[in-house]
Amino acid sequence: MKNVNRLFVIIGIIIVIIIGRFFLAQNEVIEIPTATVVTNDQIIDSVRGSYCWHSAGDATCVDSAAPHEMVQGSDMSYIKVQPNEEIEFKYDKRMTSISIQQWLEGHNYEEIATTARFNAPSEKGLYIITGLARFSNGDVSDTIAIEVE
Image (tube, rainbow, N blue to C red; front, side, top):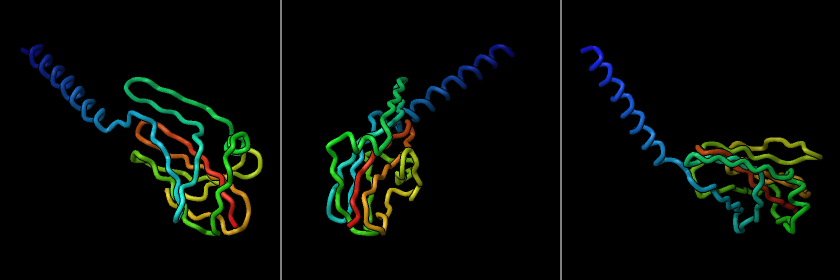
């Protein structure tokens, strides 16, 4: 009798795990989200950087060059913005968090925001900004190049 009760408990646990996995899979983001970076009245071109993504049992990590190297190595142009102009990284999937980083000399950077909306620097100059977005399935980085007038 004890063995029968144990068997029912084990079967019950297995059923709960399967049902739980089914509900988690429904919330899973299958495709890597795409970024759209916007200001008041324009879209800023971005370039996809490094990312790690897993879904449906597969995992992929892609390592790219540093953001300033990607901008220099592409035909990306610096988009003109006003000092302190609001900029936003928008993704087509729901993020769990984001870190906005301003790239400095070499491979150094500083975090300038932890929300998708942030303000452009107040001083004139060329800036490279990266959004590192985290999702339930991984993380994705996208880089923009702006010129504060």
